[in-house]
Image (cartoon, rainbow, N blue to C red; front, side, top):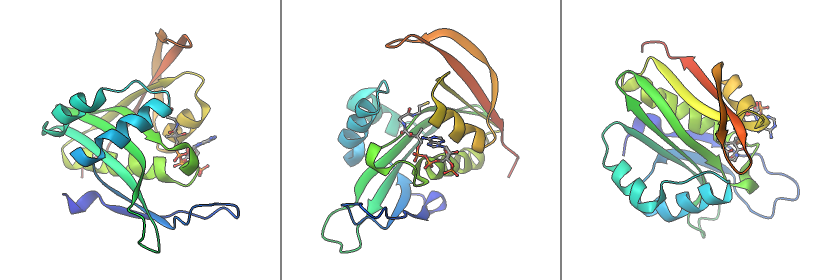
Length: 177
Ligand SMILES: CC(C)(COP(=O)(O)OP(=O)(O)OC[C@H]1O[C@@H](n2cnc3c(N)ncnc32)[C@H](O)[C@@H]1OP(=O)(O)O)[C@@H](O)C(=O)NCCC(=O)NCCS
């Protein structure tokens, strides 16, 4: 496990939050996370490479695979997987393939923390630019990416199916560390 991209964050409790989550941590994905990661992607409506695809990706030295775990203050429950991000270095570019947060844990900074941790890791691996694609009308994802300085490079027409939708191609410059 790499210490450098762990990140602690506060998860504000909503008054009616039945769960007692207080904080989360961003850590590298392990094979033990894969069933929950694949389930999260399916629930979020994202295409998934599946457990076997992820197992191959975990072995890839240029892969950046992170999860967000929510910790419980009483320590009785094991940390819950609340989010995941998958990306891959290609020479000096970082391609983000997937980012998803469990529906009950959205709007608490987990998606942003996953992305910031992944971009930092990619910079450490020498990335100068990061790329991703998002559905053209996916307001939450587009707002998240714009907050992290991604700019639209262009569109891929009818790129997504179910429902048919254009993809926005977004990129951000990463300063040399
Ligand atoms: C997109 C997604 C990952 C965001 O995760 P999240 O943990 O809820 O996002 P965060 O709480 O870290 O939000 C960070 C910023 O993103 C933007 N944002 C996130 N959700 C938003 C929403 N529903 N509406 C508007 N802006 C939103 C805001 O700018 C927010 O910053 P702010 O809190 O200061 O306003 C989450 O909605 C998700 O998993 N969606 C389903 C999977 C998916 O579509 N992934 C993207 C594939 S391209």
